[in-house]
Length: 186
Picture (cartoon, one colour):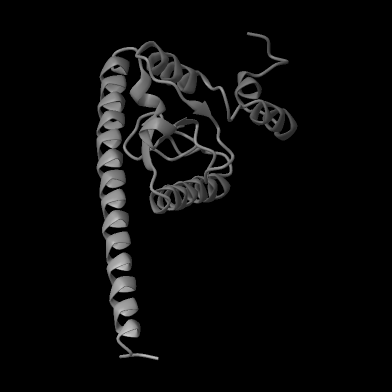
């Protein structure tokens, strides 16, 4: 080993190079996201990507099933209990705050989507390992199909409620028209 170049320097990344390294990490079209997209497409599902019309710009939007899918990296979104989520040793206060903000933002986004009548599915990066990816995709498909059934039931109930309201309004108009005709009201 060369004495002029200690091994510790190789492991420690200086701030400018770390910044450059971190800036190359993508938020769209990541490997885990591509795995989910390809698997769902093979199974006949069609989707749109990163819809700006919805809160949080979900990674995949299956409008027909009223479902949004978020593919989260275990490190960036703080997947509790996952071996891929480790606390960084350099600048830990920054990273803990960042992951905490990401978790809060994810919860808020899910609540907003739910309020708009959308179902959300979160897929973690660790669930897409070769050994468990098929089970994960099966789970996603089952949830999407379940969401479709729930959405269709909701739409049918809403249509029935609108029909009943229209009948009530029509009956009310006829009742008041009859009262007015008989000079009961002016």
